[in-house]
Length: 132
Image (cartoon, rainbow, N blue to C red; front, side):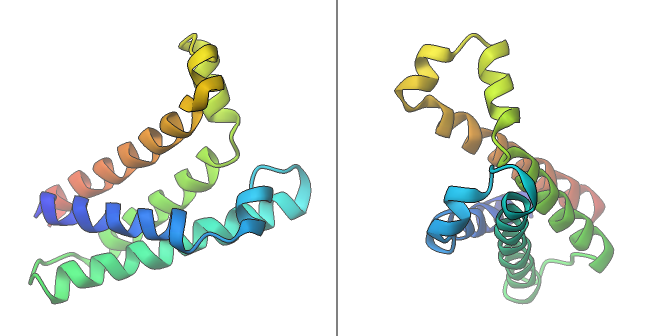
């Protein structure tokens, strides 16, 4: 079940992060204040919705048993951590701690961001596999 969960959650992530994210969300999700949080949480909610759909596909199409509470906890984890990572300061802090400033300036920050998101997807998929 783990491979199916990870692939479908990753596809959901790619859809929510690329095809479904608006210019407004992308430009303001890390901004200070209520407007930044509104854009951020709207974007994170898209991840919750799309990843929830991915879990429904795993359950219905692939016949894998995923409990409602574990599934809800997994998508809540994905949404909450996505919102946190997308505030950008966690990525910036990691880059500073890992001494990756030159690499980040050359476009590496986006890779650190995506690696953090995929790590959470893998943890969610592992947890769901263990609980199912």
